[in-house]
Image: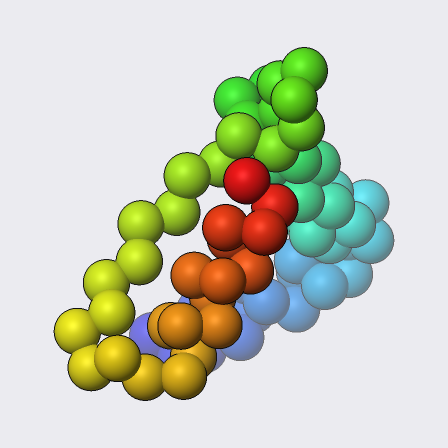
Length: 70
């Protein structure tokens, strides 16, 4: 099974267009979908739920940063 994986990986790495396509297309698709879904007239409309059960500094900072931009 390792030999099959190595053979397929070698073939994939030789094809530069497939390599570039497989790296850039997910980034492009995610960007287009995120822009369409979460960008409104008032700016970014992305809602991120935060669970702060321990009252730690990281979640507190994250909540403060989210309330500033809202």
